[in-house]
Length: 297
Ligand code: C2E
Ligand code: MG
Ligand code: MG
Ligand code: MG
Image (tube, rainbow, N blue to C red; front, side, top):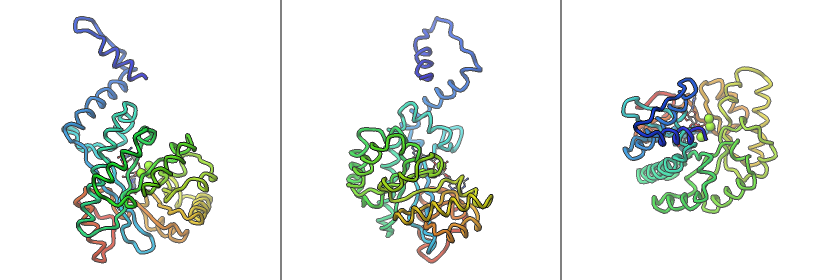
């Protein structure tokens, strides 16, 4: 809303009229307006890229698949992380266009890996609130699956817990519609949205992603460890995969294995890497190698 009125003020300011603003109040606003303008040109100038972070099967240390993570190759600022621009993209609605591009590009990449002899890679793609609420979501996803020719059950859509629980009936219907097309579904950043554990029983989920803050607390105190173990057991008992996010140390991994967590993602294995490097990681693991966090740029 603030952004809209600032844009309105900027637009209605004719060339000869004197326009001023309070810098302290409008610093953030002007940043946002600038980011918004640059995001628009980023789309046309093809400045976006996707990095891929492996998700590991803790039982055999193989790569199950990757999470697609958006990067912005800014012409002067270099690589910009989503934290700097996703919110503005969301507020302005640009995320719908950007998100569609991400999905399309990620599915094309998935198809390439299939053609290179990696047919069962699962690709996880993040959906923002606006994308999730978009009435064309299901048809947009089906069209991309059809156009790229990927197997629908190799695509997993991630939605943050806090968004999923805002309107549980909508969430349920949306997941059911997508699952009918064969697409997998996971709940992202679990543990940060204060959802009732009861939802776990009702939502038809494939995976639950334990937020990094949980994983960080493993090494801190016994209570956290007890909570995490219980969550993992509960989810596994319900037939849901549990992915630990942000695993950085061997001791965290040891604990997770003991707690029967089945999947992990984090710098311990690999940072998000460009598509080519991700392909190389697939080859390394196929040849019997293990991911040890070394960066393959
Ligand atoms: P997320 O979906 O929870 O993704 C995981 C984030 O944790 C990624 O940050 C990843 O680089 C980071 N991460 C993974 N392992 C570790 C670790 O061991 N240590 C640390 N410190 N960090 C780790 P990234 O790529 O900066 O993305 C941040 C968030 O931006 C994502 O969180 C997701 O919510 C959002 N995002 C990224 N790409 C997209 C996209 O294409 N669309 C939408 N809507 N959101 C996206
Ligand atoms: Mg995610
Ligand atoms: Mg997450
Ligand atoms: Mg996160």
